[in-house]
Length: 229
Image (cartoon, rainbow, N blue to C red; front, side, top):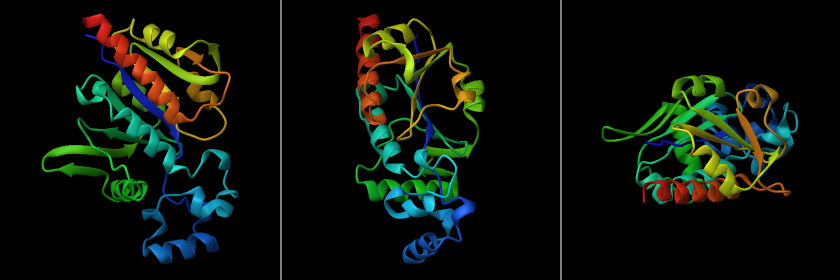
């Protein structure tokens, strides 16, 4: 049985980092929200000037990327039928496990509220069912835990290919992991590239993460079904 795994990696999803918590923009925003900086997601839409003070600022403060990409990953038959497992690895080394049959909010503000609650409580449940779970961990830690047969990264700097070929290649293995970057600009860190057995480029254009997620998982779904027809 083939069990594909999807990871949105280096995702621009984090609460306000310590380095900018005394910035006037951050202080005013948190007062308005009536929350502590540790309870508020960093967001380019509201904190752009403060974010410019951070290292790798071009890759930070984009919770919308996680929102759009996770909606694509969890709104398909492949996920509904429990044929794929979904994880988020964040740029500041947190891991979010997405449970089975989780219906994430489609409204962005509600998604932000849910993730802020997750950062506060580390777990979101519906009765006894775990919907979301958050814990510290590197991408290497996550891969060590899930023990994949192969790790396939999608990057514009990879070997030229297309979505169908990448899906078919991955589905040759029992536990393939497909890794898509959850950031707006740049590429994977070198330390993360070293964790990948193969890196493919599926377009001459720099595509949004949610577009890559949707098209890749469609091909995984279609070709996985073909294997069992």
